[in-house]
Image (cartoon, rainbow, N blue to C red; front, side, top):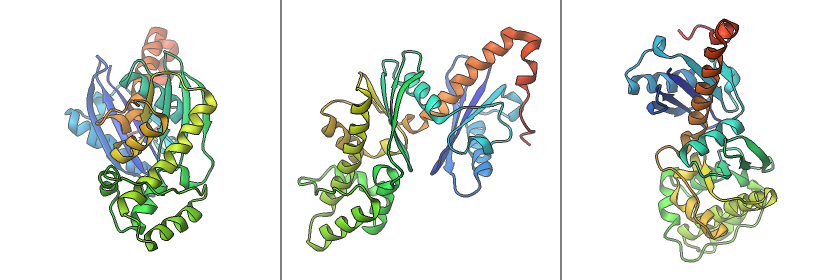
Length: 279
């Protein structure tokens, strides 16, 4: 039983292949861009290459993320909330609270031991509360997104950014720059701004231990530091797989679904056929 989870996110598309023992056999990551189906196929192909497999070797494909409907070779699709909850549990079995910070949204979830989402709160539609805000900050400061995390951890006096609107927050950043504030302090202030909003979401659902961070923003060490300082506690994040949590959860749920279908025998045969030929 070999399954694939494909997470088509607003910024990046990820794929994870699980073997019959639920071990990760391969993974792929690519920018989503405007061609969502193409991104899904590339991430899938990269994961197959890493695993040394071909498409006929795959038994079941699950898609998730905002672009899950654009994966024509999927057998099943699921919400990214369901997939991220399951992925967080796979990475850290003791997880009871999940903070998922992506490019466009921040979600706080409480999950059951099974990984099922019990409670959910999301940020508003403004980019100031999610990862896209940091992309805009980095661009304005003429830095790459990879550079800003390492600079932020060197901050000694984070500059406050209080606006809940991304446009107004950028105005605050401009004011900090023109007043001669250090770049690392401005960056740390931007990350603390996101962290404080994320903490508020978690408080609204009631924080239960353990807390696990998922989403691409977790690879940023400055962001992880800001979150732990705001919450005054340790937060789980897997350095290699944290941003693959949605794809991992989808692949694991695909295994569970396939096990059920195989127990059903002929009654489940139609669900074993993909929605379209993956070629």
